[in-house]
Structures are given as C-alpha cells and as structure tokens.
Length: 252
Ligand code: PEP
Image 1: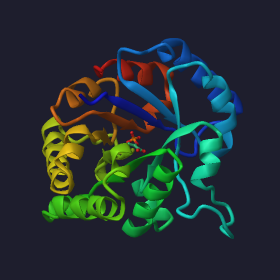
Image 2 (image 1 turned 30 degrees about the vertical axis):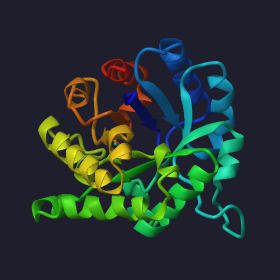
Image 3 (image 1 turned 135 degrees about the vertical axis):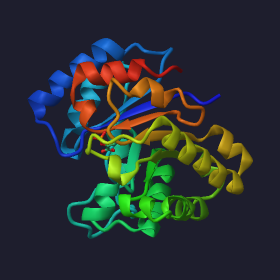
Image 4 (image 1 turned 180 degrees about the vertical axis):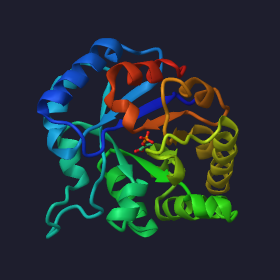
C-alpha cells in the first residue's frame, strides 16, 4: 500500500518572517496528521535550519530543492547530501525542470544526484516531464521514459526503494494550465510501466506525484486517479490555506 505524499516546493520565495508564519500555520493544521497524506516542505536552502527547528515534533517532513552529486569538493555554491542530512532533510527534489532549463542539469547528473541523496538516507523526488512542443509532436512518453530510465539504470535496485517520481509536464508548471486528470493518469500509468520493466516490486511501491498548477480546486480530482499518489505543488504551497486544503484532499 502506497502512502500518499504532498510536497510543497517553495522555490526561491520567502524570508525568515514569511517562512515562520507559513510553517506555523501548516504545523497547526497538519503537524499531527498521521492518517492522511505525508506532507513535505522544501524551502530555499538557507532556511533549512529554521524550518528544522519549527518542524520539531511535527509530522511534516523537511525537503530540499537541490543537491550536488559529489560528497564534497571544490563546488562553490553547492551543498552535498550529507550536509542536507545534518539538518534533518528527508527528501530532495532532483531534476526539476527549472534546474534542467536554467542550471543545465542533465539526465546523467540527475541520476547521480539521486544516488548521492539515497546514500545519505535522503529520498530523491525525481522530476520528469515533457515540454509543450514535445507533447504536441508526440514525444511526451519518449522524453519521460528517457529521463526516468537514466535514474533507474544508474541506481541499484535496493536503493531505488527510496525513490519518488514526480510527473511535471513543463507546460503546466506555474502556468495555470493543469494536465487533465485523464492526461495525468495516462502518463502516470506509463511511468509505472517503465518502472515495472526495471522491477515489478518497485512499480507497486513507488509513489508517483503529479505537479503542474495544482490548486485546492483541482487537487481532489487529480489525486483520485489510480496511479497518482499525491502532488508536488509550487505556487499554491506558499498559500497556507490552499496548501492545507490540497493536503487534506488526498487520502492516505
Ligand atoms: C513546481 O514548481 O514543481 C510546480 C509544480 O509549480 P506550480 O505548482 O506553481 O505549477
């Protein structure tokens, strides 16, 4: 049985004061939640210690937005998985389309980041998804399979047990244009099929999140789909009432 998961990706937003207010509201509404979805928040890296403190004793988990593939070294501006783990980070986003686009993260690097995270005991949330052009030219499944296979082939079977996949069609991120529940379900089923070719056991247990303009209004319909195990939420995760409502609209 897969437990649903909702992760908030705060991207490069917030300040100490804003994050404190947001987290206090989330902890009050969701902090004791054992029955519903697992909830994760991914703040910008400098706020990880503050969030770790504010989340102490709550059921909300801490996530990060990025990690370097190497354990240490001359990589100015980057952080390693072991460093994240020191601040109680349990999840890390890898291969978000914004990083693929602006920071040039390649499939191979994303796979190495996933491996580094897993070695440090952090579950990677690997993002896959096609652009509008790729969808319209019939390439969506090919692109998603390529991005996912890079990770599945790089990591060993045992460690893949920690993997979470997020299907995030690039054309739906921050655009207000959501995939229909049917479009999302079709791709999630395809993703599970790709995982199944690697391991039948993993296909059953891996959680596949949907991301791309999820709101309180469309969440329940998306999360009701058979192969959608929760969501990766950007913009709406910065609005406490909306994010709480999204988290509560997914069952365990
Ligand atoms: C994201 O950044 O992962 C995302 C899905 O953003 P939004 O919900 O704003 O589309």
